[in-house]
Image (tube, rainbow, N blue to C red; front, side):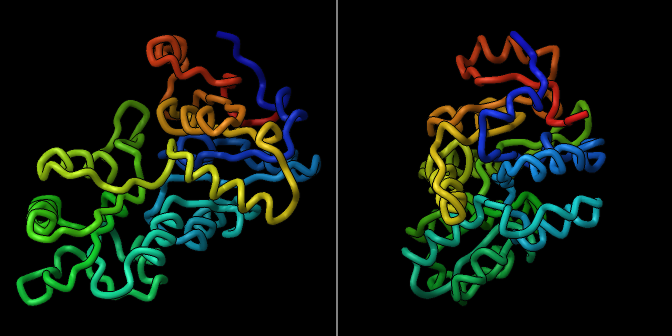
Length: 282
């Protein structure tokens, strides 16, 4: 496995899609030196977007989270979240009634902006359950894992409604050596209990990359061969980019560690175009 510098591969591309957690930031904050990378991209007229499965907050709130960390170049129009796809689905498929959700009030931004009545699962009871026309799993926080997960299971058993997962990630890094269960992992558990399949949006689904490509093409004509997808996870970032026909770069600052990268690539058969230690440009 050859490890190359991130800077050395950039001249080939006109745009870069970055995953967020594990690439630009981690549990400590921003990856040290990341501002130099964006300065280089700007100086060389390389477009950049954050393509993330994070549906915990709106694009504006996600951008503000970078600003608070000192990275002001990340604006809301450069953030493409899986929550945006969930919103598009609701706009097209759910016309009325209540959309119940698991997640924080901030994450509910995506379904609230569709003009539907939204309620957390905790507020669903016998008086309104028949009005629930969709369920959206947005985030792993903002609800009681015992009471609300049980209520979710029974809601799906009682109502024949679409269940939408706005973040396909099963886990996310909590510390250097520990992970936490993400909403995608919760969805997988509930699916196995109720025996139903949920609608999932986010990497590695090709729809996520098509949505991102459309955003880029609003600004300039660009081909897939001119876009690089950068991520830290083989089964989402790299697999999704590969399936969509993009070049991919696996970085070793998040889910995939230096000492396990080669073994994981061989065992999964998910082969990135490039492997870089990080996206930092010195």
